Length: 172
Image (tube, rainbow, N blue to C red; front, side, top):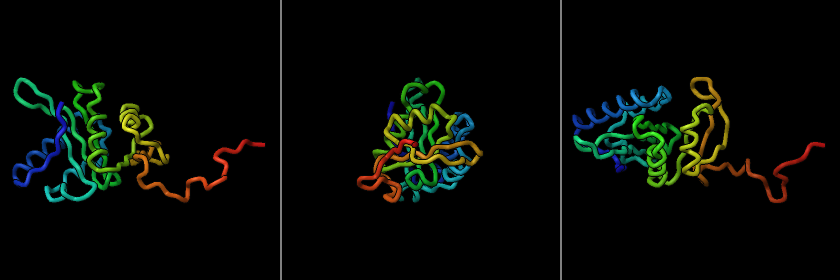
């Protein structure tokens, strides 16, 4: 499996490639990809790929007809605006999504994402690369959703325990 970054300055080629990636997300995203993430990708321009915190990666495998798409990952705003991963069913349970997300973290330096609590595969992928749950929120579909962050990214010092403060108090 090969993971590579996508960038295409030719507007016609870019539009075709982006549309193909959106179709891949629709077909293999198991209807778990947020509308917000898809819209961000649908409006993405080649120039925006050069912005800090934006990355589009693909995982490909060698097939009979050349390289075939196995997975896609798109991040915008270091994950605050969009963090999307989709893997073709033939390449699931082979750490393809984990490899894509790990490559995003390595490329961007820090990452955050929202994952619905009932999405065990995505949660496992995020925990496997070292993301930690920092908050429980209500997601766009009304489901309980975890906010996951890479270590040291955007930790609010006001919520950290102060020197000498008890982390856990036993009830009396």
